[in-house]
Image (cartoon, rainbow, N blue to C red; front, side, top):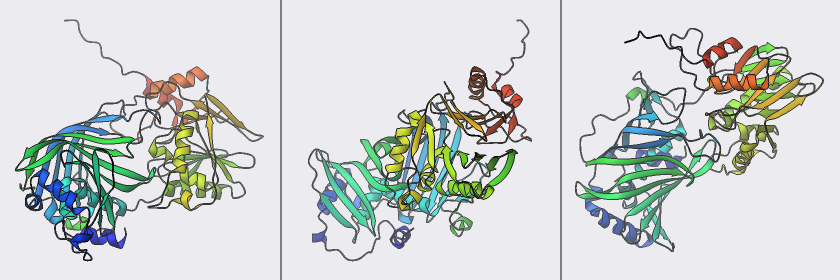
Length: 498
């Protein structure tokens, strides 16, 4: 977090006092005055202390589409509520969402999150967890992704405003508040905001434009407010589409402050724990946390299966693999599929000069990821002079030498992802896979559904693979019999005839 960002986080929305800027040097102010009049008046907007928005709509599961070019899976949001406290620079969000796609967790999920100087999440067990420093900044900025919050900052003394030349139906004003830059696009005909944009950082995508779009403007408590809110990332990935049914201003939002213990807690910093277990001679299970990897020893190099989650996790996995066989370089990493949680370390692997092997349908997507800018937060690839290459593979690929044969197979017809690869070691009779079967803990009292397991069994049998043990990227190593049991349809108890 920069010093300028930290200053902005501490200032009330309606009381920014930055370096003096003469009104004549704020060429974007006349446009925003027009916007304020169109919405109901400058004084009325500046007097808004709280705003409660309620409705329903959709959330999109970013980074989890069936194929890189396919639409994102959708959650149905049945109960949406967001309370803004502009006067105290905080907000609280709560929603209930249900997946409209096949998943291992089909239950409705209640999500609760907030911001009050720091970001925090409220977990199902009522525990409150602090977010990361980057999330703190993003959540503070959500106050300005609302037209009222944006105008309260932009109309305050000290905010730098510039109207850009913009032909067409939209006018365009830029806001710089303590180094925090936003843009608002305004309809020339109605003088109402169409969208607010900001350049943000995403760990996988790098620098990206977050756009919040507004439509369906209606009267509410003396102001005109948008009753449909849509968010997109880079104009390519939809994030949410909410239709509001109610908007209340200056209502009691209740206690939405962060607990003192959370405000004083350090920002969340994920720990990286990589353990190693030799599950066959020269084959190691690199586990720890939720996403695992596998290291495979070849004659003069090492292979990895999976560069998951993040740069930090993947670099730690590579370091662990190198320590297992110091004289052998990590030459390639096999990516199981394109989903963001399994691709979060691909750029880090490329920065180490490692070849990334992925399904041919994911090759273009990873090439795009490798070219994306990471200027806001320079990652390992942005800092590196090395560049690994990306290799696409099809239905079946063999990697072999005098030490070992490694087979890479496409998992056909799986609803989770069309780019899924599994890795088979025929001599060891090991199958490495991700997401199609994630074994529960051995002491689990409730066995979660495994909707993709039957398809995995079908692919193993179709290919005639002699699998004795399954090595999942999530979970634990299990015998093939456990996968077969999970892939069988549930038995139906006989019912007496009526």
